[in-house]
Length: 308
Length: 128
Image (cartoon, rainbow over all chains, first blue to last red; front, side, top):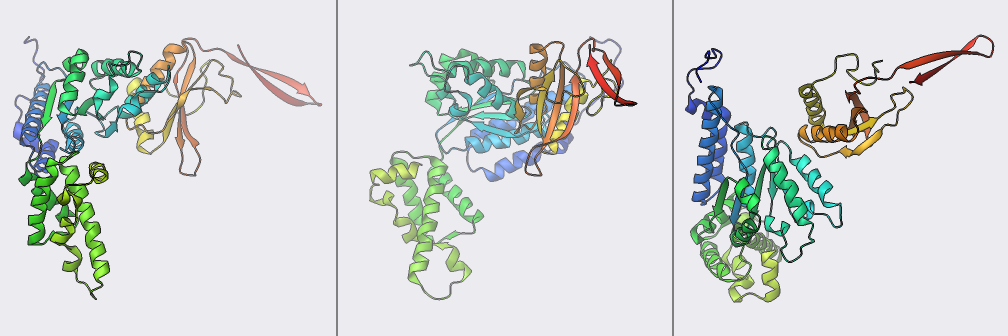
């Protein structure tokens, strides 16, 4: 244990300074500022960051260390920010030196699984090669496993993934994402995945208040404002939309705002009210939002469109 | 006889770290890297066999190193080289090429001089 102490190693390490100099602080602050709500997720990411920082400090003091398993699973309903957080995670891991390049390769079943015998392995390997040095984000990972078809090529992709996740832990981090209940079924059918994934992070649905904040944030980024009546209308919209099918949290809000902008542009164009100033061009009125079919119960075809 | 083609061939063999660093340089310039191998190091043999397609969307050298290792396992005793392709001119041009693996014992290349047409000399290289 205490054979000739290595004099080149520092005696102490300042975690605070490490935190500042690695740039992890910026990523975490960005996460706090850019993402509304998601408290449990932020908490888990802060904990993970602390663990990685301490591991790094231990390494610099020459203490026994093992590359921690960093593969993660993100579960949550659509539109709860899984991809956005994965992107931030990639940045965080790169700053802390756990992946070399820190890019995010986002794939689904189609990118991994081939169409005929012998097509899957090269396809999966290709994706893995692209993801080396970064983060591989597998969206809707449970589609990889199709229990109803025993000759499904998804199993082959899963085997290659598991092998790489185990043997090349230094080279890439795999994040599996999907809806909570289906991911549970997926993990229970593939115990290999569960044991290789150390961090299970659950993304809660947004509350109505948070969705309102998200809408305000999206609009302010695009230089739009809501009139006071429009704010009331939006709050009602969110409440109604949640009760309708294919509700996708922040994504539904983004689509609603996009359509409100469309209607606003159309309204301004048709009104033809002479010269417009910047305020008029950037203000969304209640009627732009109230025109939505959501207020009249929603048509079936529109529901599909809203979920897209 | 040590064959000398491409970059770095007058230097001692590159270590894995050095190859990784070179590939990282290629990728940082936006070049695609391909793996090729041959058992015929004749200088006129410009067409080596391709090991898979050149890799166009890599970010990290590890992907190339995996392929190089796979190629070496599948073709023991072959020469393996990496080619870097630059597409800025609108077509893929080889901008860098270097040998990364050589056989344990490299074949000899001998030269034969033949006098033809009076005192003119034709040169023939033979591997073996």
